[in-house]
Amino acid sequence: MVATAPAKLILCGEHAVVYGQPAIAVPLPDLRATATVQAGAPHTGLTLAVPDLSPEPIHDPQHPLLALIHATLHTLAAPAAPDLLLTVRSSIPIASGMGSGAAVATALVRAVAQWYGVAMTDAAVSDLVYQSEQRLHGTPSGLDNAVIAYAQPIWFVRQSPAPLIEPIQIGAPLHLVIGDTGIRSETRLPVGAVRQAWQAQPAHYTALFAAVGDIVRQIRTILALPQPELPLLGALLTANQHLLAQIGVSSPALEQLIGTAQAAGARGAKLSGAGWGGIMLALATDSAHAAHIAAALRAAGAVQATPTVVQAHG
Ligand code: MEV
Image (cartoon, rainbow, N blue to C red; front, side, top):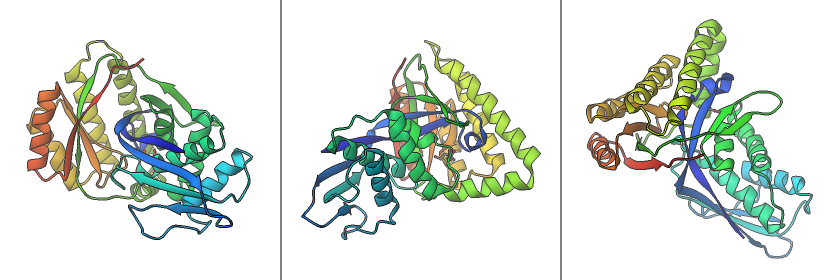
């Protein structure tokens, strides 16, 4: 049984989304995590193989991914300790802001559900992965698991008792370039630093988050237009970046790639994900322009620069 899940790209609203502001994220279908389930040898219990990371299979039930599989079995009302061999592979760069952990977790949940012949809803998959992300990251908003489980562009608001997740309309294809600083940054570190800063200066940070929220609402409106207003959209993305820098999650390497993209004519550019490293995105006018920006980013030291198109949707 094989299941896959895409990487994700946050267009706007990261960090502020943890504090209740909206965010917009899209799946990146060309980068995927894949999980395979097979019958294991008798009396071996659950075995997880992650050949890209380690030659030794994992048996420790405390391991976050095995804990997730146990939670999935519980949800499915399946036997608690079946003899199963699960293998995960992923083409998504780790700790780069593209949701590699959530994609691996999503593929695993879907593969196990398929093994037992259960059709899980996107919401149920997203919930299970969210619980796993909480064990790893402390205070995730739930945005990453939602966009990966729903595998479509979404509007996301963290709220009680359940998040608001809406598919959004993309009126015309969006040409983006994703530039990778090559600096790995674990999500929980900048997220924790922002929490401390917010606790120290709640009014200041709440105002920054609200300003991000205003930008995200405007971006949703522009994205729905059949002819996107690229200069305005780009200016809003760049304004989001300025707020992220004030929030404290940009970095010299990100700023350098963002400046390079702008010098190459990008309509707007910003970091994407948790920051302090990982990836940035730039808005191009068309495919040729995207290729030009990607070449400039590579020349400026990006370890990868990938043009990508977010297709019209909804
Ligand atoms: C990380 O991909 C996105 C953040 O907004 C954290 C979160 O939403 O949990 C930085």
